[in-house]
Image (cartoon, rainbow, N blue to C red):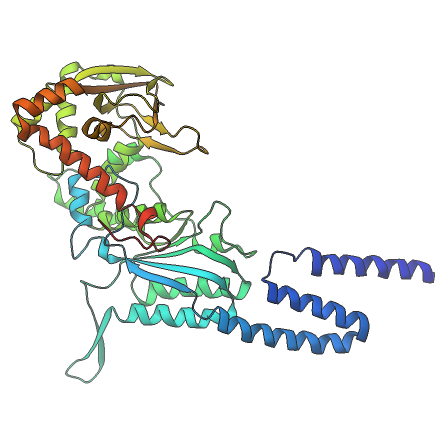
Length: 453
């Protein structure tokens, strides 16, 4: 082989290795690890391979020591989800009763927020902390035979664990493997029903390892809400109901990955509700995801009856039938076609509306695509009606047709004058929705350190 050919080949191999080790790794490591790479390159260039191996060993030990001190605690905070709320505003009274239950409700959801760089040096500390946290939810006692038994504290032990990686900057391969092993231990050793991992972005976890695939194995999930809901047994068949509950609750067992903490909390709430009665989850999802029957399938009387039902469901207090009928009598019917605007941001707030059929979307003008879906059985415009502020977003119809029932400001003010006790229900609904948004997880979790109002 000609020496010039061999030399050229070695030159190309050297350039490729240099680019792979120095250029391609730029941004994939923190400054200390990347500095170790340059140390090895320089020592190898001036002193040879043996000296570079020694320098590499020194750099690895030094990096481990510094990272162990700098990134000792990868856990930023731990808290139960007692005061956290997801963006699933439209849950029924039965669902809210489960979530507010002090024994089986939101306090059985444990949120763990991680931070910084996860590597082999601090994963042992992280794993130890999680073990210690979950062990405290169990009490050890001795039976008469002297053998140790475990008695679970059902009022304290978490049923769902959410691990939030939103503030994690990087995860090396050894840490990724440790997270997968920890997931299996959490589910099996501590009897956790569901373990949810939050990536914090659509790009997934900050690692080259395929962590999402390992943490979210294929599982059965509710994909066709309407078909599932029609198979939900009635209360008249307790045996079938119990069998159905066991089958549906299995959908919320194991582990899965969500891209945001809001989605994870929604999933966790569904798991707690399904544990008590899966039919409640199916009905809530059917209301939120499906437009129900076509508009032509309803008569005006059926629509008004649906208005009364919606008002009773969203009102935070039990409203008598006569009071609900009085309020609904002040509403008039409105119909909108797809892409038709109900109001524009900045318009005068002159009415409150109930969405009986169809689906809307709320959009903030002059912002980067900030939207929120408005599902049927929602009340909209109540805040502007009460305090008189202009419309804070643009509301547009996204279904083929939407039917709303609207009460004007004039009718509302007349109701206040003639029957202030009944008019107060609108105020209570307004306070309810404001409380939900204040306690939404995006406002409450550790970044802002806000307290619930």
